[in-house]
Amino acid sequence: MPSIEERVITPGLLRDWPLPDPEGDKESRGTVLVVGGSPFNPGAVLLAGVAALRAGAGRLQLAVADESAVALSVAVPEAKVVGLRRTDQVLDLATRADVIALGPGLDDIGQTTDLMRTVLGAAGPETAVVLDAYALGALSKDAGLLKQHRAVLTPNVTEAGHLLGREPGDDLAEAARALAGRYHAVVSLYGHIADPEGGAWREESGDAGLGTSGSGDARAGVVAGLLGRGAGPAQAACWAAYAHAVSGRRLSPRFGRTGFLARELVDEVAYTIATV
Image 1 (cartoon, helix red, strand yellow):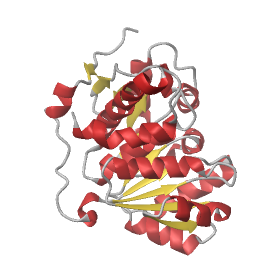
Image 2: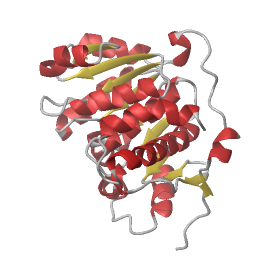
Image 3: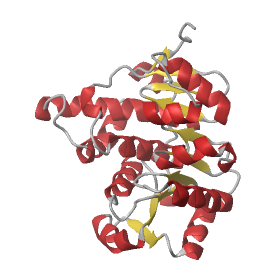
């Protein structure tokens, strides 16, 4: 099957598709709740959460493994942090959040499935959702876990295969389109973005250095932050793909093509977005 026609994401395209103006106080730029982080991988939530703030979210809340809650509250003093075993508090946060990013750092498919069922069940119908990592594995087993209409999926190629039930092959544009149709969500797959209405875009600035530990968590956080400040799902996915890729390019002169870290990507995001 030939590849579908995609619009290339350029600064000009993004300038013609401007993000909502960051006016007003932090409430007007949305509350992002990041749910994830096993005891052995709390850093994924940190990366996603800080990336959401760098992308312009007004408030950040983190729901993580209880063992990591105190450490993360110190590492990210801008965030409200609660342990996942405090179920009533987590559900209260989910009820009030404008955006829920679920999956970074989780490592148990059963726990992830339970979290999706309870947290997304508590969210309102207008809550935007970003699913990453193990949340995508859970979704591949039960598509009914995702009920929200404003959703973005950020799979890697392996996760895309689980979601499709087959190898995605070389045509990632077609794979992204198939996933968008199957799950009624915007899909961002290695620079290929598709929405359920047939829109398709391609980001061409990415390089090998983006394939570093934590990079996907950072990208999911940027999507969540842009949704928080009022961008639509496809717009947030396209701007995030550009900000993620170009932030890596900005770091290459200092660290080489493959020497920069995900935390350094996160620190470039605000400037990259501001200079489009």
